[in-house]
Length: 271
Image (cartoon, rainbow, N blue to C red; front, side, top):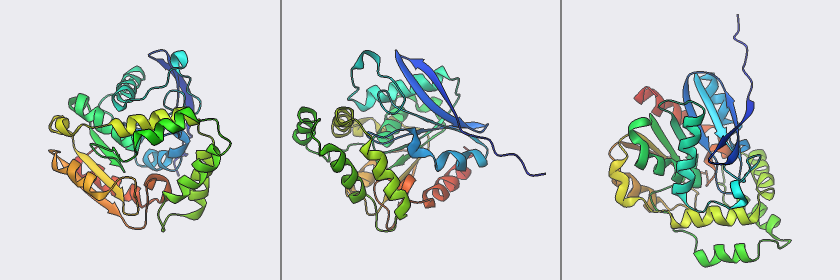
């Protein structure tokens, strides 16, 4: 008899005054997925069923102010560590034990920061197109976005900028979906996300990340140069690296190939 497919269920939990929305599916070892700058949990809609079918409890949350999550006191978070501690408190609030964290872009940096501060209570980390330091966007450009966030062109900038950051082998329908979702992002929140991105630097603390780490990079990703990923790996005690040809900055949406790499990593460490 074929097992009935479980469904993704949306829930809310209050953490640090933020009313956080998250989606979950499946049972078993928890895998928490963290979205990129300006995006939402919907970015992980291809990933959640994949991990659920393989025996995991797959979870994706909207960071504060993003998607369906309300922002406490309406003050945006603009540090990776601030996001990371909130995600950790979220995982504790919903009763997760030894979770694995998967993140892309700022989500990847959040995962690394979690490893720095909570490695003994984490099963593993998957860092997609992130690094120990990512000062790849000049802060003056980000601040221009904060000062001029209401321009009519902000939606078009999000749309075309997202398309430009994908790889030449990315699935066209998924690229269009990702770019359409980028149009929905709040420009002020996105600018604060990018401030967190460009100020992030945990190079001196990578020795504290004792759990296994999988670093995945899209070879067409111009936002995170290969050198920054290599620098990150050199500072980690237990790490593996996979690079996907023809894939850009949003590899977990652009292709399902990323899931095969993650499955192999999970099997190796019995995650």
